[in-house]
Figure 1 (cartoon, rainbow, N blue to C red):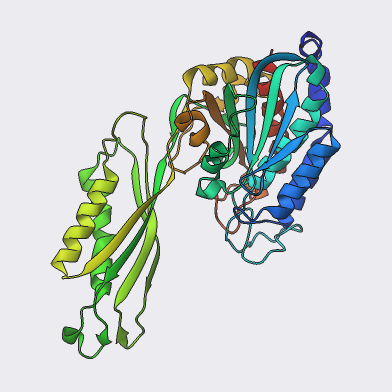
Figure 2 (cartoon, helix red, strand yellow):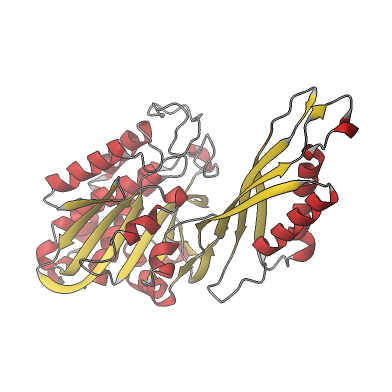
Amino acid sequence: MESTLLNMELLEKEIQSYKDEVIALRRDFHRHPELGTQEFRTAEVVEQYLNDLGIPTQRMYTTGVVGLIKGAKEGKTVLLRADMDALPVHEETGLDFSSENPGVMHACGHDGHTAMLMVAAKILKKYENELTGNIKLVFQPNEEEEGAKFMIEEGVLENPKVDASFGVHLWSQIESGKVGLQAGPIMGEMFIFRLTVKGKGGHSSAPHEAKDPVPCAANIVTAAQTLQTREISVLDPTVIAFGKIISDGSYNALASTVNMEGTLRYVYDGSDDTPQHPRKRFRRLVDGICAAHDMEYDLELVPSSYSVINDEASVDFMKENVLPHFVDASQVQPYSCLAGEDFSEFINRAGVPGAFVFIGTGNKEKGTHYPHHASNFDIDEETLLNGVSLHVYTALEFLK
């Protein structure tokens, strides 16, 4: 390891030499996006790339790819993770390499994540004879729907046993060149709700002969906002968002059912309970409003991801040993949000210490400042090498 550390200037030049390659890989994945658990082409590209480098791989959770770089000496194992799935979004960026899969788009930056870890693997493979320990490269499918959980169930943290896990996310809400990192809760716990309000259909000219669920559903949407503004402290961030509302009625026929879907998001610090109690409050609200409207209902609350809680020691390690290699301390800022991220399965629910880092990729002049999951989302490709650097230096410094 000593020789590598004595040649950090040469290592940084090597990282910079892969700029064109990491951009080309990202654009290829962007052009061919695949939804969660359907990343068949992506997995094959990753698998072939690693195998060509001499890195053995195994499949997990159908399309997940796990590579292992074994050091010359026994030691700890560090896990580096990239997610691969795209979203059911119709792309409207106008990029030359726009999605060729209608209705599917890399609108979250996972194409960049995959490319960054692939190039980092190429660099790290060259230093395997100097490593004391192992690097586990995890290319994870279906991050949007808890893919990490299933990889863990299939043993991704074993053989060899993982001692620490690190992940990265390109983030358009942080300015390009900056890095977001802090200890404690940094991303929201998220539950998906699916609610069906059940009434009785009828003719729109005689609503008194029907039981119209639409006003009931509208009341639920309106009243849910008071939970956030009148029952829960503004110091306890909570968002209740309705993303989909569909009835089986028409312009002249009253509906018999209204189906509603959305999310509950809030910060959870890992204690026994959360002060917001959003699920309990939401159930109470739905039950009361449906009773007032004489409606029946079905409510399903599905866990999607739990709060990502960065380990303090791992954050200190990143700030002291990793980030200084490629970013000035003045460019590192605390950052947290209510977006969901299943990296929590690695560093919180599985009990493996680690940290999740945000790589700023927002640049208004380049049009990369739009929010994640939007149809015009894009990344500043100049920031891809920051992600490569983060992976490379994390592994080398951790196994130092």
